[in-house]
Image 1: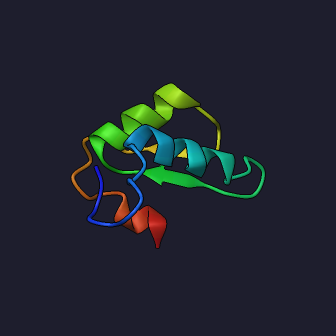
Image 2: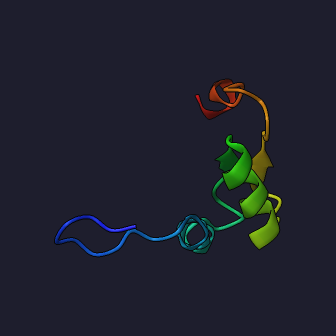
Image 3: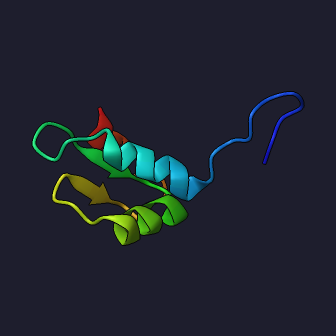
Length: 65
């Protein structure tokens, strides 16, 4: 995917790998709400600071508040 005159956007996998790289296990929490992102995040690196709410249809919002 690219925009006219701009650098290409990262793939979902690349974006999630960047999130993982910048979220230390001991000081952050990662909340995944949509199916594809949550499943891919789990497949890339299942860590104790990640909460997957796959198929929750927006029920993750109270956890994020």
